[in-house]
Length: 335
Figure 1 (cartoon, rainbow, N blue to C red):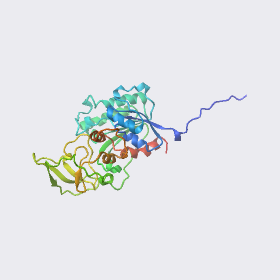
Figure 2: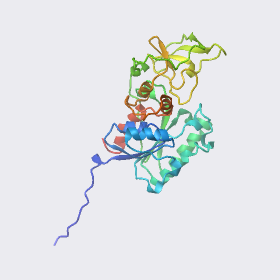
Figure 3: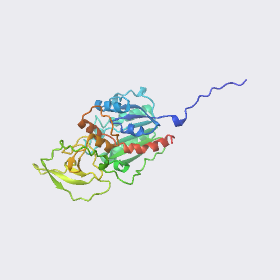
Figure 4: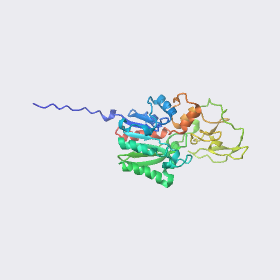
């Protein structure tokens, strides 16, 4: 008599989800990018900011955890990809620049490593400011690469300017990818840069928040260059005679825009100033969403405009991780 053998039915790879976690999730740029594919599922998010956690839940239906240092790694769900846009201030030219010596934020990279040690994901996708590559004469990046290699990862990185991926915003960030098998970060494929005018809401004419009466506008004579923000005017203080910082310039909407900053001064704080028709103004929240590749109906959960712009200033531009989606799908055999 033949013995009956029960065969366990395997779920075809084509319907298995690629599971990821979204650390330091912010507004969820990784989530927004992966949401464009049926193959991905976010199983955990975390962010220390209570306000941004409410916004994330309102948009993705997933309530993020708080402090990464308090995550229960042993009981964390299994996942394939670790995404982390970890705090950039310790490595930023505009931040404190203390790197790993910043005990509050710089050392959070080691909390990422603790999760990697506990869960051993197939891929790590990290994002930070471009200055990370050269910080402390390159030693900071060397430490990150070395620690990932110790854990069996092949490491590749690229500084990606969002304008090269179809965004109207000139924003360069480093993306570091750790994988168990060779992985190639996608090259930009666009041939025409997207101007700020593409995301403008022409019904917005109010510039009441922009206080220009204390400044003289000094016209700039520079030549417009493709893929570069073009300055039309410097704002020079009538009192001090100084000016010309990023928030004290007026930019051309027919070119790409400047980097949106969470904290910056001058009348153009955060978004920069643009000449829209006859009006000089900052960008609205809705327009700034367009600078980051988020949907115009993104839900800020009753957050004030200034706080919304603050959160956007700390965000990743969706366009860049969006370009990763087909490559990551191929890596996991889903295409």
